[in-house]
Structure formats: C-alpha cells, structure tokens
Image (tube, helix red, strand yellow):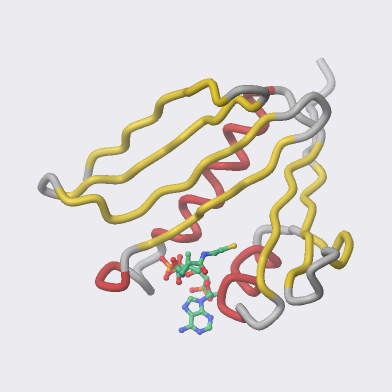
Length: 118
Ligand SMILES: CC(C)(COP(=O)(O)OP(=O)(O)OC[C@H]1O[C@@H](n2cnc3c(N)ncnc32)[C@H](O)[C@@H]1OP(=O)(O)O)[C@@H](O)C(=O)NCCC(=O)NCCS
C-alpha cells in the first residue's frame, strides 16, 4: 500500500491530507485542518473492504504524529454520537469527550498532545 501526503491551502484553512492507495485504488485517508488556534481531524475513512484490519487505528496514530509535527497542543474531531465503532477507536487512542456540538447528533472529542521538553 502506498501512503500519499500533501498539503493544500483552502482559503483560511490549511489542509494536510493523507490517502492510502492499494494497486491504484483509494482505500483510506484523512485530513487535518489547521485554523489559527487549533487542529481538526476530518474525513477519516476506511473503505468497507479494508475495515477491521487495523488501518483505522494506524490512520489515527498517523494523524496524531502529524499534529505533533505541526506543533499543536491538541487535536479535535467531531463524530456522530451513534458511531460507536469510531468512538471506541478514538477513545483507545486517548481522545476524551470535549463538548456536544450545537447539532446534538454529534460530539466533539479532544486529544491533548504531550510536547516533549528538551
Ligand atoms: C471507523 C473506521 C475508520 C474504523 O476503521 P478500521 O480500519 O475498520 O479500524 P481498525 O480495524 O483499525 O479498528 C480500530 C478500532 O475500531 C474499533 N472497531 C473496529 N471494528 C469494530 C467493530 N466491528 N465493532 C466495534 N468496534 C470496532 C475497535 O476499537 C478497533 O480497535 P481494536 O481492534 O484494537 O479493538 C471505519 O469503520 C470507517 O471508515 N467508518 C466509516 C467512516 C467513519 O465513521 N469515520 C469516522 C468519522 S469521525
């Protein structure tokens, strides 16, 4: 599988995108959007045929690494309250409940990123 990372400028947001391609077919990916004071993980997705093989977990860990590289102290994401599978995956990776979204079907999760002192 081939991992492709790129960075694109979207008006006020800077998006860092990662996609995974297998034999030319897009199988998984995510984006990180960077605003003035925070980072948000969006569109994390694994193709149905590739789920349950640990790719989702790897993507979350890769997003956390990206956030560390960017130098952020936290990483946010929004997830549907009934998406138990995804919530379990994020909690395993130490994301904690942050707030309810104004649209009550969603919650925000937040990961505090430890920055190593030199
Ligand atoms: C959520 C999603 C990304 C998981 O991807 P995946 O590659 O299947 O995930 P993994 O195989 O790495 O499993 C990650 C964790 O998810 C949870 N999980 C995976 N399959 C599960 C299932 N069938 N039931 C319950 N939990 C499950 C487990 O916590 C698992 O960790 P574990 O295997 O160590 O217990 C994938 O199902 C998906 O793309 N769903 C649609 C899009 C989506 O909901 N994205 C998140 C939006 S915020």
